[in-house]
Structures are given as C-alpha cells and as structure tokens.
Length: 192
Image (cartoon, rainbow, N blue to C red):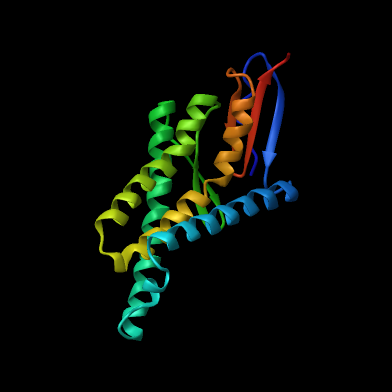
C-alpha cells in the first residue's frame, strides 16, 4: 500500500524506506528491537525479580495474571493508535486516514509532513503511554510490576523503527518533507 500523496514543489530527490521490500533493513530494525527488549528485561530484573511474575498462589491466579497482561496489551495498542490519530489531526489540521492492512488498521496523515511534524506524530504514541506506564509501575504493588513492565518493554522496543527514521531525518536538511504511507516512508528533499 504505497500511494504517493504528495510531491512537494521544488523537492525532487526522494528516498523511500520500505521495510516490506528491504529485508536486510527489516531484520536490522527487528534485531535492534529485540536487543532493546533484552536490555530492558535485564534492567527490570535488577529492579524486581522476574520470578515474582510467576509467583502466584495457584494456577488460576497465574492465569489471571496472563489475562491481565493480554488485556493491558490490548488497551496499550488501542491507546497507541488513538494517540497517533489525535496527533495527526492536531498537527495537520486534517482528519487522519485509516489504512487497513490485514489484520490491522493504521492511521496515516493525509499530507506530507515537515521533519518536526513527523517526529511529533511518531514519538507521541511512545512517550505518552510510556509516561503512564512508568507511573503505574511506581504506584502499583510489586506483584503487578511485570504485567505493566512487559507492556513498557513492548512500547520502548517497538519504537526501534521510529528511532531509525528519526536518525535518518536528523541527518538531512531541516527542510525535508516526509510522506508516511504506513508501510513505507518517503523522504523528499531539495536538489543540492
């Protein structure tokens, strides 16, 4: 699903980042996400032993912990996409487009974005839930730490693609434009 929405006036150079087409890049970003998840897991073990997650009085309570974790993940994924939609609408002043990619639905901006706009839209769904999850980790009892922290790991490690795109954008001139097609990113820049 790569529909060109814009070619800004005077912007002729373009670089497309498509993780579906570029297997090597996809593996690198997924590897970075896994490394981040492993590092965050080790960091969490220093704060609270992971055995506390499995330390439940009986099978039903352990099952309840897994159900709570899955429900929390569902709420997180909904919240993540909702925040993205709100940010797109706030930054662009236009309704976000819903893009269906089986089995998911994503939101995409209806126009090209400046680097600053793109970074706001990309990182708001990571930072806002991240702050909420951090607050929950500090407030909830220790026995619930890992249920919340696993979602935080998914949140932070899942931002590997956004970090990569941000790195690419910050190396370019500030007047670059970003076309977000959900499954690919096109970065437009002016001729040098």
